[in-house]
Image (cartoon, rainbow, N blue to C red):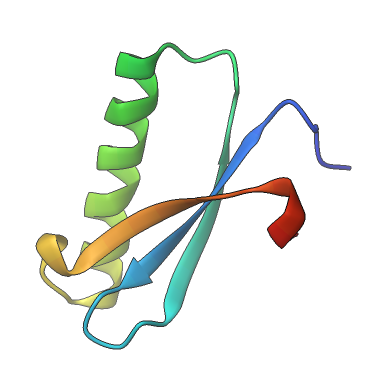
Amino acid sequence: MMNTADKHYKFINSNTGYVIFYASLKASLTPDELKAELDKIQCQVASNNGIFKGNVYWEEIKDEQV
């Protein structure tokens, strides 16, 4: 069961516009911790998909999008 206090993100390949990964992070993270986690995931997603890190970006999934 998803914790509603978590923040949910989708990672998108900017070349194709396709979502290539989803992640959930604790809402209790500080802004600096959140940015560090998102950057780490961005690097992993790019590496795992064989694309340039700059071609991967994230967006927070708001409740109305779920």
